[in-house]
Length: 165
Image (tube, rainbow, N blue to C red):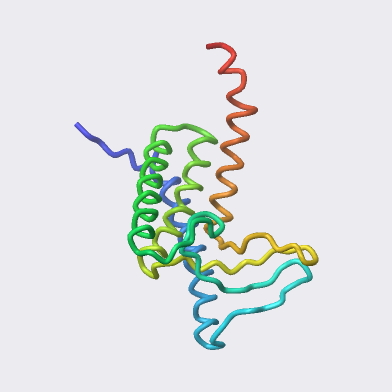
């Protein structure tokens, strides 16, 4: 029989909720600002601006296409990968579990926007002089942190385990 252990899902569930809410709050703030000001282009520091763009593509605006069929196909692919990440997180333990949960949380934040707005609002513009990195959002930060942690786990923590096999 299927039994839910609330102690095992409480911390991961709270982490998912926390990341999703931080992402939603930041995006809602920028979108309200854009509603009032009709655009968002705010200079914060010499390295950081807030500049709202709508991303219809995948990571960092790649594959941005205005064809609805392609957009829906990409969205379906992202949803499938998000579900696979959740399944992997459920099966994983330790740092790997929380890294996957971090990626999952950022992914559902962006997936929510794809479904609700038909695009993802990106607004963090990091740059050095005239070199601008891709404009991103809070969900993208958590996805990147999770992926970096997964790479760390695979290279440094699983390295000894792979040699034993």
